[in-house]
Length: 223
Ligand code: CA
Image (tube, rainbow, N blue to C red; front, side, top):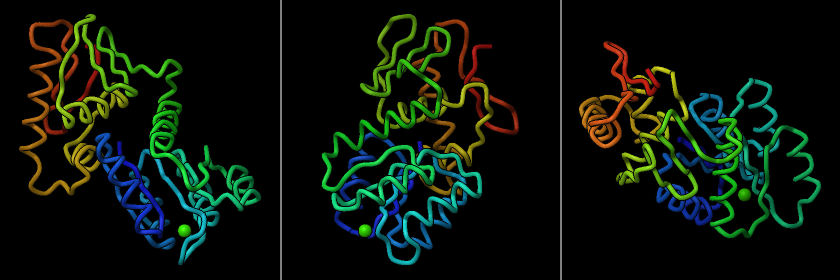
């Protein structure tokens, strides 16, 4: 999952980035409101963390512009304790949740998980296709009740695929969402990781869940 952080306080931004990257999210940071808005409008983020007091364009204006342009990604706003009215305006303008600074990083991570879950329409928090089950809160993966050990990257790839079940994911999409890199020289790495996943998820099991779509990419689906 790819997350955009628009925050001008360098310390806060790098703190958030580190914590999210440790959880295997792909993270981009903008310290400037105008640039952040531009990035958000690209539509390539699964979630946006938005500070309200920003140079360039204020957070509230960014939020309004994103919603006006039909960007549906959940937005978590960050506000100072004194900005109660800003928080209300933010929620009115289409923010999905807010956090008051200073906040505990565990709380930020929990809210990020909750917002991504809401986006995927999953009430239990578990992601499931057939007998394959992912728990984003613990990053536990089971198939047919059997625990499967994945590396952080394998997990991130599988979570991206299962959140997009039935949708063909091109290599550039995977590169962008899982590795946060441009596609260019990346094609082999993606194929290698998909094969790792196949070995762990599908080998010796039926039905196969990870499928190659010739000339396009990969899709996770039940048949
Ligand atoms: Ca700020």
